[in-house]
Amino acid sequence: MPARRPPVPGDGVASAAPDAAGGDGAVAFVVSCEHGGNRVPPRYRELFAAAQDALDSHRGYDPGALAVARQLARTLAAPLIAATTTRLLVDLNRSPGHPKLHSEWIPASPPDLRAGIRARHYLPYRRRVEELVAGAIDRGQRVVHVSSHSFTPVLDGIVRNADVGILYDPGRPGEVALGARWIAALQARAPHLKVRRNYPYTGKSDGFCAWLRRRHTAGDYVGIELEVNQRLVTPGRAEWRSLRWAIVASLVEALGREEEGRQPAFGT
Ligand SMILES: [Zn+2]
Image (tube, rainbow, N blue to C red; front, side, top):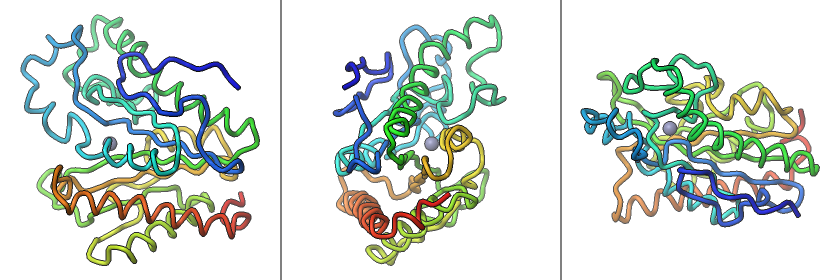
C-alpha cells in the first residue's frame, strides 16, 4: 500500500479514498472537478477586490459541477480530486503554458506572482490526478477518468443548444464506446434531455483529459469530460436531484455494459 498522502494544500475537497483509484481491479475510476468553487485564498484577495461579479459568474466557477462529481465518486467508490479555488486564479483545466492559464485579474508582473500561484494551487492538483492515473496504470489497471464541469446557457449572446455534453477524443476507441453508451443510457432514462457529444466544446481541445491522453495510450486511459448546462443547476430542487441521479446511474449502466465487451471497447 502506498503511504497516505495529505490532501491538496489549499484546494479543499479531499477524497474519501485518496490512496488508490477506485474500481474493480481491472478498471480504476478517477473523478476530478477542476472548477468546483469560486474561493479566493486570503493572500490573493486584494487582486479580486473589484471582481465579485466575475467570481460569482460562470467565469469564476462551474456551478453544480462539484455536486455531480461528489455523487459520481461516491457511487463509483472512486477518489475525488476537486478544487474549490476560483479558476480566475489559475485554470486547472488548462495545460501549462496556455495563454489563458491565468485570468486578467492576475497581472503578469511581478513574475513570481503567477509562479507562486501555480506552485500553490496548480501543480499540486495536477500532480495529484496525474499520480493517481499513472499509479493505476502502473498496477496494470485501465483508468476511466471523469472530469466534471458545467457550462453557461448563453455565451456571447449565443444560446447553447444542449442540456448535457459528453466530451471525448473521437480518435480513442475506448472513449468513443463509453461516451456513446453513456449518452444512450442517459437519453433512455431522461428522454426530455438534449444530450450531445463533444458539445459545447470539442473533446480534443485543451483540457486536463487532453493532457493526460498525450501521456497514456488509448488502451490505458479513457478520459471523459462531462458538461452540464447551468440552467439545470437548481440546488434544493427535485429536478436537479433527478438530473444528477440520471447522470450517475447512466454512467454506471454504461460501464456495466463495458465490462461485457471490454476488449473491443477499450482496444487501442
Ligand atoms: Zn469547467
